[in-house]
Image (tube, rainbow, N blue to C red; front, top):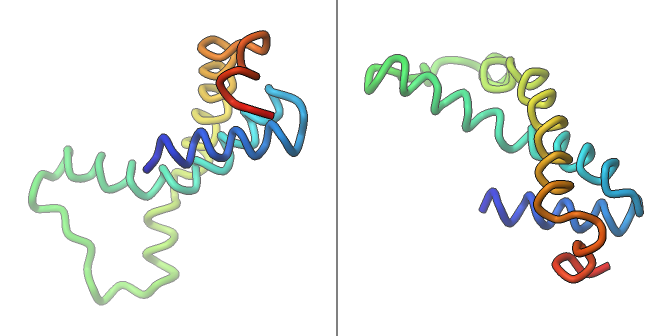
Amino acid sequence: IGTGILFGNYEFFCNSLDHEIAAGIATGITSAFFITPFDYRKINAQYFGNNFIISTNTNLKSKIKLYYGALHYTSAREILSIPTYFSIYFPSDISSSIIPR
């Protein structure tokens, strides 16, 4: 699912922005919103093991703050990594054959 979202967003932003680096940055920002809650759960499960449970009494605003507290870190990572990934593995001279425009 994550890879489909990543490639789909990149294709959308490539067609919309017509600039591959800007498309990679926009894809990074977008993907950070999907990745951050999963990273939160994964890291806490690794750290606390099976003892990691979020209270059901916690209100929605607190849960959102909890899950998206590291959004700025995830965004920074994704903004750097996604344009780098697409520019290395799909350079502009062959990207048109992989990702149609």
